[in-house]
Length: 320
Image 1 (cartoon, rainbow, N blue to C red):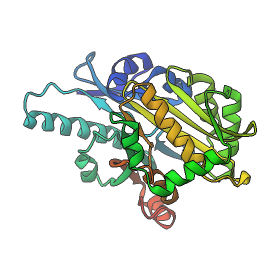
Image 2: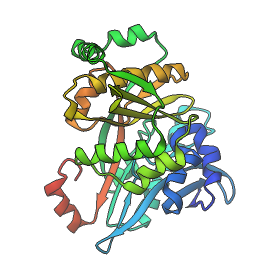
Image 3: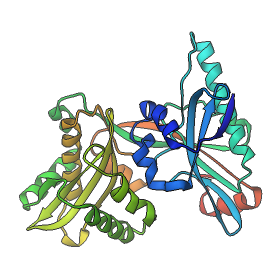
Image 4: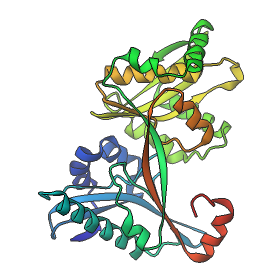
């Protein structure tokens, strides 16, 4: 088995998108330009059977391996031709061991990687002294009637949506241009004291977004934009990527209404799953939970050089 960098991202995307979906598409990867490291997993010199990606950066003279901003995981995929569970498990173990060894060989000061939900065998990373941390997202099965989905909402959630409608909040689809979306979310993230990652945020709207892979729902009151949710989707799954509300209006239930409209739009597009795309912040988790979704775990692996790990324990004890 050979792991090596892929210079032509089309080679990776042509295989990975079938397994991973939108976050392994060429348009999504175009957001990151040539900064992205795409690693192919080859059965031999030429037969690609898997791959993943990450960013490698430097700061304060230290090297860091991390996920690209706004990507939920490293998009690792691999296909096995195992005939029984023993061979499938053994192949998975071999792949994950090779991936772990590859990450180790990069000798970074800090490595933080998240894996897609189907990847659950992280033992090779544990054996190499990585911290393996469970994380969670929420998902809603869209292959059921909308009324069943809404019946699982918290009653307070339904009340908030009704109040927003009574306040005269109107929701429209795809009624903001690319520049308007970029500036809205730049302002929204800044007001929430969240990391913005301006080049990547701009790239999502200017290079990636079109009607074949994304949509936005926009809340207005008297023609004034007071909230937006932006989702990306593929054939299977719709992901809640960005959401923001102008809290200065004092109108409750705007974001609740926007999520409900996003669910309806995802169903209209034929998606089977609505993924809230990460739910680790306590306040955000509570909000997403109010829609009655299923809690789904995924895993991150973290490792830092010893001096850096000791420093990080004071700020990120939950990770180190």
